[in-house]
Image (cartoon, rainbow, N blue to C red; front, side, top):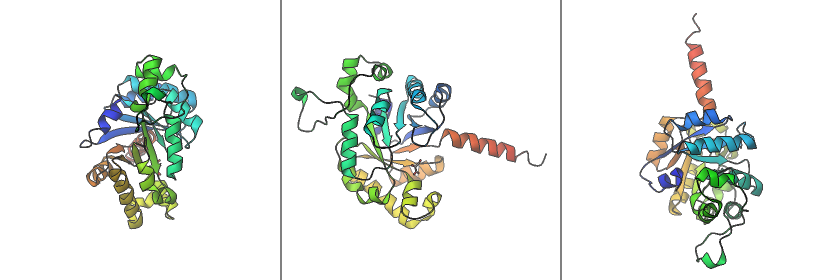
Length: 265
Ligand code: 3PY
């Protein structure tokens, strides 16, 4: 079982990740060996093209860490490209409705042979063909196809008013493993400046509602964090999954702080 799935089954321990918006296997390898459980390869807002995604996903997985890819949109071919690279999971932004969530699940799951189907089997329309995903998982193609439906995680971002209104129904969709809150976009969608979510009671209430929806459906709850203090607070609130920051944040903050120390020279 990929690390991110094993960790998700232990709700008493926070699952901690990092976030890459820049391409490069060297960078990914360096961050992965720091001890994170998963790393999100951000192909929504990051500067990471398809070939870079393949290289980055492979480098992360080779360190025993789970690569999760944030796709740009809930779209079949983006899910296909992502899982075919060997990602252990997808993070899908802008999830608005349960119908959209059901479609996303179908894109991410291989069809299960009729003879193996049970009443609760989740079967989909994912096409087989990538030799790269089995290689990343260290499996032969047949084994990968037979196990990938159980071994890949599907997380969806609730970050709009429409997603908020439908979050209970989205959480109940079979195959959706996690509701992950994008607090900045949620705040913006609710009519406030994106970066001010921590100070707006209405947004905090919305966050509680999404957390409750995930827990009531027996799903995991994730939160986009900028640092350790935020992770600690959200873990105490009941969330399970967190990124601790991001490559671009680390680079810009370190540079700004060190440059600032030299202002008096
Ligand atoms: C948000 O905070 O809205 C995010 O999706 C993080 O990128």
